[in-house]
Image (cartoon, rainbow, N blue to C red; front, side):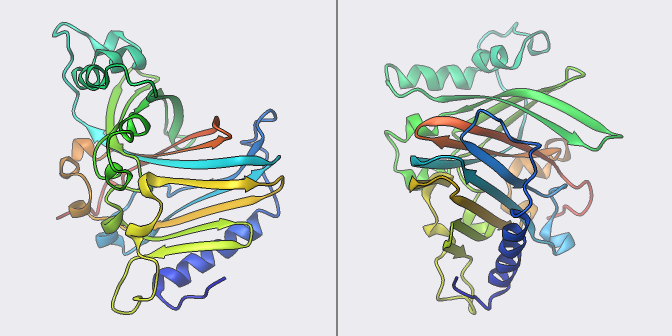
Length: 298
């Protein structure tokens, strides 16, 4: 392991130590007995906080254990923020009377993307998702769908720019019938060069880290060099292999989508993680993180 004396490096090392130690005692609460990939850890902040106000780093960590050997194990990240209600192709369409997939299919922008794709044979990804936000006293249960066009449009676009444009769309509905709309990017986090400060990728004892470059941390792998589009592929994995991914995020209003300035869109941020083993979807996790209500200012 390469030791680093930078603030981000030290924090990252401490976090990795905690992850490694915690994997010694595995919880079975998220295990699918039929899945060959064990989700040992999926940690994220309880609230999305402004670094400017709190001076806090938000830590996200993912731990996986392979139950069998794979030719390829791929981890993909998405980040989505709330948007206004979209336009619908039919002016009389009522989203309140429709399910999330019907709503998505009725969207004018989605129809336009699908029409432009024409007869492209590689399909886009349709992900059914669910999550609980809040605590036992005040909680909201959401279900919905995410459309990810990045794999399809990656046929025509350079992978290095996929994480810079909105290729991902989400519709969530809570148990009370309220509908929320999201859009985002395929990447570890939105605007990685501004928000992502540290990324550590472990495969057993092999570690690769990426850090924000500063006057102190010049001899490091820079954040822009991290795997493109938030997609990490591990080849020739064996049974009992462990994969640990940890990232540190620091954000302010100026580094988030411009619409987040409006408090009505500052409700939730979505981090979505999925894992494919030999091309088959085995992990489909949506982390719905509420924004801290105070502390956000330009």
